[in-house]
Amino acid sequence: MSATAETAPPAPQTPGPTNVPWWTRGDTNAFFGLGFNILVNVLTLTGLMIAVVKIPAADVLGTVLPALGVALVLGNVYYTFLARRLAQREGRTDVTALPYGPSVPHMFIVVFVVMLPVYLKTDDAMQAWQAGVAWAFMIGVIVMIGAFVGPYVRKLTPRAAMLGTLAGISITFIAMRPAGQMWDAAWIGLPVLAIILIGFFTDVKLPGNVPVGLAALLVGTAIGWIGGFMSVPDLSQAVSDIAVGIPDQRFDMLFSGLGDLAPLLGTAIPLGVYNFTEAMSNVESAAAAGDNYNLRSVLLADGAGACIGAAFGSPFPPAVYIGHPGWKDAGGRSSYSLASGVAVGVLCFAGLFGVLEALLPVPAIVPILLYIGLLIGAQAFQAVPRLHAVAVVAAILPNLAQWGSGLIDNALAAANTTAADVGNDALTNAGLVYSGLTTLGQGAVLVGLVLGAIVTFILDKKFHFAAIACAVGAVLSFIGLIHAPEVKWAANPEVALGYLFFGIVCFAYWFLPNARTPVTVDEADVVAGH
Image (cartoon, rainbow, N blue to C red; front, side, top):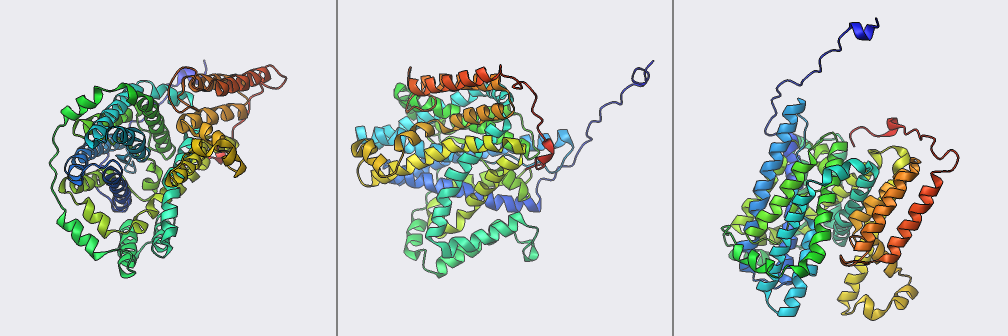
């Protein structure tokens, strides 16, 4: 009889009860970093609502921000609960909560793609606001539906595709704008960046263990005020405009907006899909950093947060943020996100965002976003096998294309014209591949997942899987979820045909000699954690 048959295997060890602290010194660091990240985003969306959609400041400060505050507090309470539950289950004290706040891409999309066209057509800011609230509610519903699909998509999608897509978003939309804002006032932004990079990327501590985020903000704010970057009259005016906002249900607005739902679906469907695919990538990023959260729980919370915020009058869906590994590196554990959400929520209720905008120089706040962009971009290459680095780059490209075409559109809009008015030939003669960039960048998150998966399967010589991924790309292109401006039948048949031809080539290679020889992926060259 074999030794295996004679000896019973040892019983699996279950982690014992763990005393998970409610607060650590690292939570203080991460709180200041994430808190000011959310702060910048709320300041931005406040300005967009008032300046672009012309919604009265009293309504923005008295209804929209308190509604957002409700969603932020409830969502961050839930994610703190998830972190502590994971820590108890695995017997660990180093679990980091998922960061949560208003989604950056969505705040621009709901303003410029949903609300502004309604306002320009009707000259009615209230009707535009109602459309935005209905759109945010639909986003939440679609994300909650995605909660039952996302876990299966995550299992089938290679990590390189998900982390590469996340890196593309992070490098372009999270890091580049802050970089520009910093170098526009480099004498404020660069000293702040130095404090953040040294404090978060090295083991050198400040005297008295002063939190890095707080030190960076104080130094940048002091330089900005001493150098005349800020205005005392603006601050005085902001103080006089303070108004406390009490959250109240706005079902009337929601139902009025839902009454004209059809025009909203063209963006709500792809953006809802974007939400759950981005959340999927963020959960994968957290798993690569050592914290493996249940994707379905995350998606249900994201969707519920958008619906709750909309019911109180907010058109800005909150979501799990990019950046979990950065806050983990900064020492954040279970409560930093909760503290950030509650602090920003209180500011929303108290109507203090006008004061903060007048008090804190933007170049002193945004370097923390550049730090997150650097970290997430690096993680995409460090948390996958070296062989898959090519797939990471492939997944980054669509977001670069979307960012580039968006800059062109914004520049033309500033000149009171459009790409259609200028003409593709003139843009091409100026060295701009505008049409191709636009096509590649439409539905960039899904495109990144598809391209990253195709390249990963090719690198692993799983040509039949690459062919299947191409078929998925063809279907998504045909119905307009990727590579098209709107969801409709035969949205971009040319690109769909291109994916089909790509898939045929991959499938044909599957029958060639040595095509099915397994590729050895060396997991030893993956940086542990992130």
